Length: 324
Ligand SMILES: *[C@@H]1O[C@H](CO)[C@@H](O)[C@H](O)[C@H]1NC(C)=O
Ligand SMILES: *[C@@H]1O[C@H](CO)[C@@H](O)[C@H](O)[C@H]1NC(C)=O
Image (cartoon, rainbow, N blue to C red; front, top):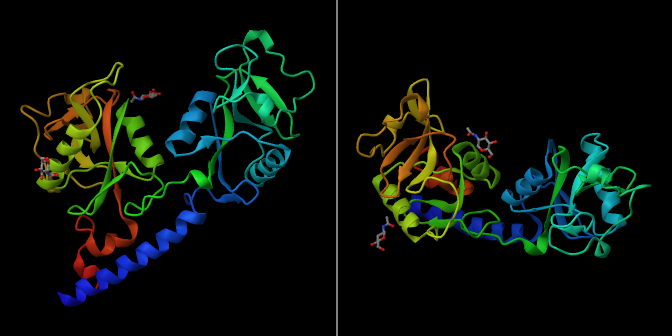
């Protein structure tokens, strides 16, 4: 017993030291490009998306849709994306969201304050329908229809990284729960199950899986505390997406384990009741499980393992024997 405790303390000490250093020069492993000149991290998204989806994708990764501040940054990013894939242009975080031809960055600053070398004859607002901007690989800008899908780059300034030491990720909204050895974040932005799954994944977590009564109680508390009462929109109040689904008539956690074998499987009264219409998993605000349509928008909770400690304290996927 003493030995186990001792090694655990050593691991903890290491963790703190490593994470402290990481906050200086690390954002996420998928933001592999760092430019000292801008003190920023970058990631190329090759899969083309509309302007709004591109912007949102960067946001859920905790970053921002890239736009060049100056010609050096424009050139550096063209070189970077050409190392990866050969698109001839990408969306940048500059558009005319309110008034045609009045272009501003995603931060609301005028295009005059950032890089703005137009391609010949551009912007032309063709057919009155081009309100979003692309950066071409000849370092000029063009306006296009915002529904066109394009590749894009996300950017994170190092000075804007807020490292969460206990949860080991750059997001302070994850809360570490010592008794459970995990971190949780309640999302008050309603999404359908599929998009909730995607959002948790993008921020390096996963839709929460309840594995004990204590964890259920905690998530009920988290739900009570969440600032959710004023959230408007067309979503299902009273339910929260969780990380379990029905596949081939069997409920399983998104880690693959049958619900029956988890440490918590308390369905709400008469649940599950949706048959083939409700193949995704949620809980009511009281913690009882509920089947829900995968297209139903509601709140959701993401969970995060603590990577370096997981072998020693994670009772869900391993046990103490693995450490010795
Ligand atoms: C939930 O909140 C109550 C009241 O604040 C507290 O007494 C209880 O310990 C909490 N339970 C968990 C599991 O966090
Ligand atoms: C979930 O929402 C997204 C975005 O609104 C939509 O494209 C997708 O079809 C929805 N998925 C389901 C299963 O309803």
